[in-house]
Image 1 (cartoon, chains in turn red, blue):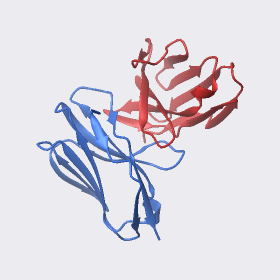
Image 2 (image 1 turned 180 degrees about the horizontal axis):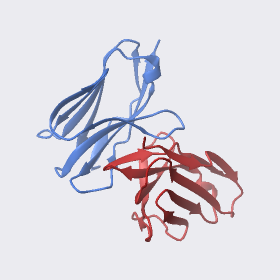
Image 3 (image 1 turned 90 degrees about the vertical axis):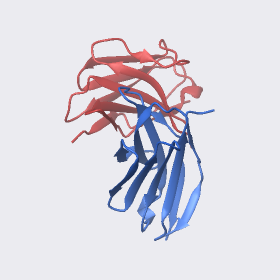
Image 4 (image 1 turned 120 degrees about the vertical axis):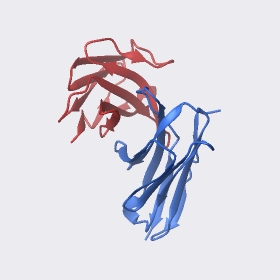
Length: 113
Length: 111
């Protein structure tokens, strides 16, 4: 139990385009999900906390207009990287909260050309 | 000073060795401690979850927490090449949802 999926697993896009990443809890409902960013050989950096039916809470320094988060249902949260630039290239990981534990998705590798 | 300090390594040991991974922390409010394993280009996988000071064992893995010293450890016995991964410590305060991660230690087990 407590499986989290992400789609797509990897994506390549041109600079200036927008990319949407989906995070789904497959066998449980999650009112709270988290979005992280991870650069090579570095730890996870929390970007925002996503709560179903309400606005996401962003960490300091994360642009909310650039990283749009929508948590429209108890099993789905989406992260949209708007007007992506090469510096947005990274590994994006979501997690879902269940039984006071975070269960992580497999991650999405974004490359912006 | 970071809230959680973890030596990034890399750490390389022969197969069968006992591995010791450690983290220190500065925030005495942290009450829950976790160890995650992350394979390259994959999401973190929860290995151990502890609350109280002392030891918790699960198969070849032992998690140790010393709240008085603000120090946690993960021991891996009879290490296998399949244990090669990055190990991340994480912790959170009572009532908190957000985790604070260490930098992660890259471990390689050589056959």
